[in-house]
Amino acid sequence: MIFIYGVSMKFSLRSIQSYIYVIMAAVSIVVFVIVFNDLVIGNQAIIKSGLSFASTGNWMYWIFIVSLLGLIIFIYLYLKFLTDAKKFSDIISGSSKQNFIKNLKDLERIAYKLGPAFEEKLQEAKSRWNYKG
Image (cartoon, rainbow, N blue to C red; front, side, top):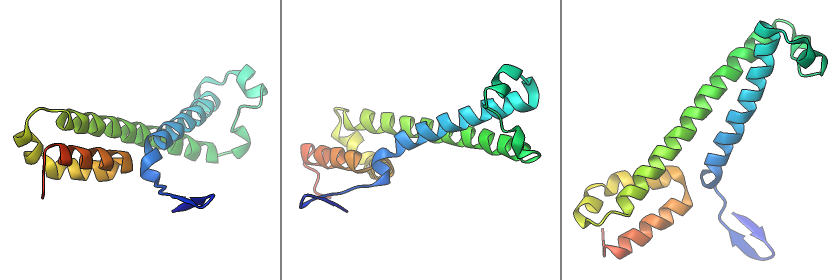
């Protein structure tokens, strides 16, 4: 919990996870492109500008592998976040109480994964459907 001027705010990394995924994917792309240039393309203009990992020696191969894995992982996590958010909003905005109740366990799991804003939306939907569970 964070206290700013006597007011407490709940802070959770889950509330900014999509931004973290995008930033980490962007960093992975930049590092991947630089190392790919060093290992495969060898464009001297880029290397002479200082954008090079050549000084790391054989570690450049490991940097290449880690940046590629990071790129794949963070793009996957961001796409998973987007699909979960879409599924959540589709079910919440539906017009069927039966469908809402049937998918409630899934909605609670998704809301917990996606953060406090989605948990609040789920509570609003529960009150809208008069769910007392």
